[in-house]
Length: 300
Ligand code: DIR
Ligand code: MN
Ligand code: MN
Ligand code: MN
Image 1 (cartoon, rainbow, N blue to C red):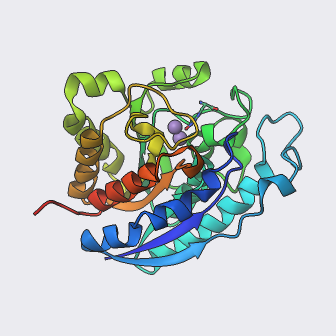
Image 2 (cartoon, rainbow, N blue to C red):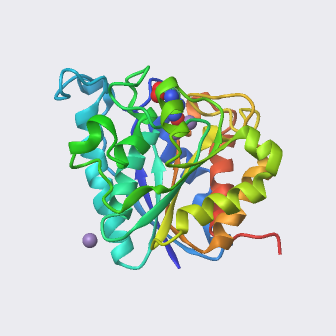
């Protein structure tokens, strides 16, 4: 199959600058070669044009009661990414979006769910289920799953709602930093939720198999969202919001191998790689290796 790489070099959604260099760092780390070694054909669509945050007013155009920085810019990028993802799928190829901060997932999910029913598996230390009224930071990278599900203020936001995505097909894996309102939502039981404690108890294999099966049940395919802060900061130091106690290198590969074995992968993104916080680009290199595992690379 052909994997179409789409760069979305944003840093609107995070308060640490530098995550906009993620697509360059991931390409430089050898993404195309890694995908080739996985047996797929990479095609690079280049980067979306993203105006620099310094040239924009973070509060322009958002409804005044909304605590969500750079909302207009985020909407603009996500609309264009959704279009690219939709066109890639319509051509029979698999979209792989490169962030940028995690707000780009709104565009990936909307595009992936435009002409299909989809599930989503969220590999992340965080739940990304905040809304403009619950966010502690105003950073949209803490909101993309809520936005794509049309929760809270996002209910009437045309560019954010992913029509073909429902909560019963959403699984979150590896949680260890959850805000108060997010915890309330997760306790309501609409989502399949796996904290790091669940991984400790049951193992990454069982957890990922169940997460993928839940996401894939009765839908056309699964979107896999990989926030590199899912891994332990020892493995992935180049992220803006590191949280101790994440998955190991080997657990991450094991999970991505299960993503491939499930054979339901429809679209994917790699987000939150920040080379300015990294050591010798190792987080970007890790991202390329994990993508290769998700697309079928094996030792023999
Ligand atoms: C935090 C951080 N929950 C927020 N979220 C992050 O700002 O809403 N998500 N870092 O990946
Ligand atoms: Mn279409
Ligand atoms: Mn995230
Ligand atoms: Mn995160």
